[in-house]
Length: 340
Image 1 (cartoon, rainbow, N blue to C red):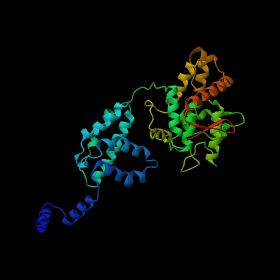
Image 2: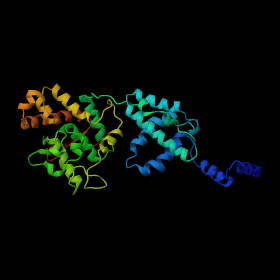
Image 3: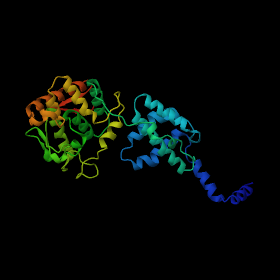
Image 4: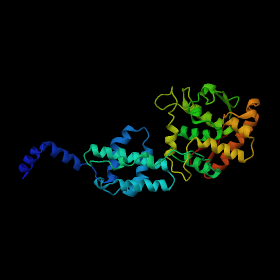
């Protein structure tokens, strides 16, 4: 029987010994979506990704509960579309796109293992999942509390927790923070002076530091060691962290807030400060925006004292949103925060 099968395979240009070995290897591979996803995480993702938590979360939360029991050979584009539609229904288009990409990569690995012969995720184009739209998101005070409580109680890197908090209370752009150097921070003057070459508008910018911000910078100074950067790279202390680091850190969180991006923190601060009646010029100066029109021509004031008072009030306001369920530690310069 085996001889006849061998002759048939040879007649069709197939090496019987190689075919037998391939089938033996295939038997060792898991064949359900759930089992193979775990195999892929172990064999590929955890070895090639610095921080695989985002991919792991997508698999465990969105993929396995819906299609985990299916055999890989049974998986169709329609099955995957069901997964993506459920994610989009909760308003997380970018997570749906990430999920498609995860499945596409995982199934490509299954093809390389000889388990399946086509990739049903590849048929779903990115433009049908998430489209670029103009953003107008300002988080509510309640959402700020939910966000920061989620950050501080997560297993996120401590420096990244402080970075996200500083982005909210200092109102700076992400690049301005992550590329900050220690020679810009004056602990005695309670100021952070960002040089013009690092600013979007090429003008130097002074950030008055609240007590909370100062306490965070003090801790970051200890964590940075000998690095000239406030947020040194884990692999090279002479360089700052990657521009994508904080975005990836935020995506690992499971928060009950609207879909947002880090840049929305600035819009959030501006919206809530205006609602509290603060002078628009003070707010715009904190955002390092160019003041237009005649007012912009004649207005060269830094409003340093006014902005210092406003940013302290803003940091206190943010505190009030996150106090519930938090352990607040009074440090040398003011409040510092720890997870439960």
